[in-house]
Image (cartoon, chains in turn brown, red):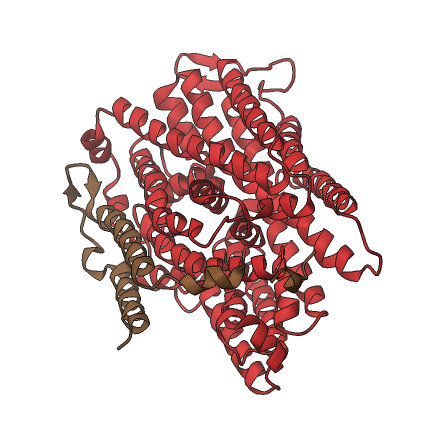
Length: 77
Length: 505
């Protein structure tokens, strides 16, 4: 399986993890002030940031930068 | 009066900073529309995040958590962290590259070239404008209601505290026509002067202001409630979980929670975000935006959701959700300077979206309608004047419309704007990644989404939250309708020419 396939599967896993079926009615508090459901999703935000950081490390579209740069190809307003 | 002075100082600082950015303006239409592709990583993050987070980030998140509980964060914030970043990476960077290579400054310029049809712009243009205008109205009306709330008379156990200007209005509040006029004038001044470069500078300042003020409100409110532990203890138990309450008033159904994942896709089609992407100096400028966006969302939304949950222990249910943040600060903190600072934060969240939307509509009118149809060659100076003229006209029309609709609940339209843009994302995804996508597919997609949007909007009673099939948001169904129409329409028509494919793939 190539890099993009692995990234896609991890992305799908993250989508499933977002649903968080196991904490739905858990009213316990983390650190004495944050409901579990909120704590889980706050951590999820950090995991999302980490995931995209890794994606950019391993699959950054370097060729796009060069492609973006001939002057006579411009046609916009 | 101190509250008004703090707000005035904030607006003065904003204007000074944005007008300073005018000294960096290079005087060309390219600089006006896309800042000559020169915005670095930090300013790109701040302007993209500030534009994405409307007043809903502070006011709406608190109010929604007050109504629905902690599920609000998972429903709207953590899903956005994952999906927004995906859109920036998969759509934003590619759009930046195409825009930079071919000089595009609007979505329609790209779609016209990619789908080999000039007429497509006349179908998409009115739809995009119609979906952006309610946002503008929400911004101006929201600012008017926020300022009226903090400057009006207040009834307390010790008696009535008079409003700031008792000789001006019945309850002494600053009238909405004046707030709208000041907000519109401030935004217009810096957008007129410096275009997207001024917007980027202003957005950076505004985003920092509303992030800091959200945290300040969180700290002060928790302190007044006896600390974080005491604050959550006095909140209603029903709001500490996501389970749907027996009456269905609190919590979220699992079907709604799942289908809500489609709403954040809307950033892929926002015309004002499209323009911000094009301002990036390089593709690398996007790296910080992609990684830090989910973290910035958490920094703003976690405190606001907690404030909303805490408020359930302070106020009876039934209070308008939009008033919860201001009311909590007003009742618990009381200090007029702090109230002024938090209000400045709310205005910053509103204005950081308003400026980009005004600018993008002016850019679209100039490039997609006038320049596209003109046989005459305009000078760069004429193009600049034209764009500024359109922006003035849009601001005036929006201001008048906001005054006329002030008492109507335009906030209920917000979710429908998001839904419309989200449902159109198959169009941009197919254009960028599917060589077989054709103009027939593009027309089919936009028409199918428009018809389904009108149908659901009518079924909802013209606005407000609406679910189908026991909890699915219409955006999810519209997205599949749009994607299906795009696929079927494309497969039933001739593929794009080799020339077009070579140009974009």
